[in-house]
Structure formats: C-alpha cells, structure tokens
Image 1 (cartoon, rainbow, N blue to C red):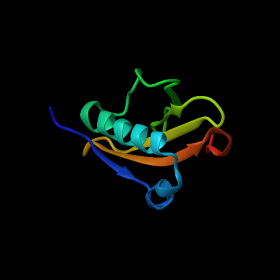
Image 2 (image 1 turned 30 degrees about the vertical axis):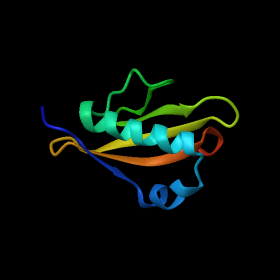
Image 3 (image 1 turned 120 degrees about the horizontal axis):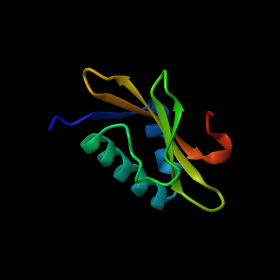
Length: 95
C-alpha cells in the first residue's frame, strides 16, 4: 500500500514549540495516521469535512478548555500529498 506524504505548513512548524506536549504528541499521531491511511480519519474525535471541493478536513486533538483542533487538506490526490495547515485552539480555527 502506497503511503501518503504529510507536510506541515511552515507556521505550524514554527508554532509547534508553543503547543502543549499532549497536543504535539496527538499531532504526531495524527500525521502518522494520515500517512498510513490517508485523509479520511473517522476514528479521530469530531472528524469532519470542512470543504468537499478543496478536500479539507478537521478533527479534535484535545477536548476541554481550550479545545485544540487540526485542519488538513489534500494538496495533490494523484501524488498522495496532504498538508496540515492549522493546529491550535478551536476559537482561532479557520472555519
């Protein structure tokens, strides 16, 4: 089975040091799941489609206050490339 390539938007890489350790661990786990099985991740909490046309999705990484979410998008379906473009609090999520 061909794996997916998962990239993190440069802003996420820069801000990841500021994220709680639990959220960083969950992000690494999500990235691994995306790499192994692709952009559809129904086993993640609150997984959902943000935009079918652009193939954008999200899930929760940490519940409670604050809630942390991750958003990703398929940037090239033929080459199997996914970009995680947001990780942060639910309040600041781009949706």
